[in-house]
Length: 228
Image 1 (cartoon, rainbow, N blue to C red):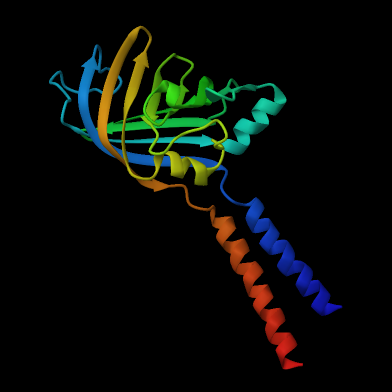
Image 2 (cartoon, helix red, strand yellow; image 1 turned 135 degrees about the vertical axis):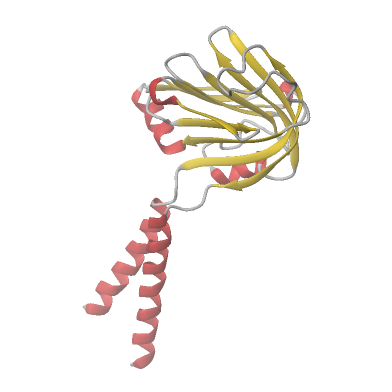
């Protein structure tokens, strides 16, 4: 009876660890600005000199589980053209998307907590190996949009709600892209090169605890059986 209980606990703990995996897809990059077309620089509060050649660090993040739930509940939308693109829109205004850009120690972060967020993958029809794009918009219409050329061929069969598959698309190798920063009718466009991923999402703390519990219980069971 007790052994059966321990077995059940061990199985449940390992199963829970799979459920507890972080659903937030995160990528952080560094690169250099090749071309900067600036009309305002208000959001980043940068001086008027050209930004070309400056280093840039930027990140994109979206809650895949929340986004999928919103689509199912009608607070978001999923558009799929099997030969061209796969796209998700979030209308719920609940921080499903976050974008951040840092240049010359000045950081701008926008979360879609009062506005709109979007995620899109586009095949080679959009250029190079394909394109991976995310954006976060405030209710005030301030927007950061990150558009990256994928480092491997993108197809609409790739799962944009999987950290592993997103890592494979943009987290391996060196790529290029564009960052758009909007404020009303004003826009900053940063063409970026030599872009590489610094890090990706790590499991939630609960995941590590669950794994430790599950494997610890499995080890205890093994020891108890060996002692008999």
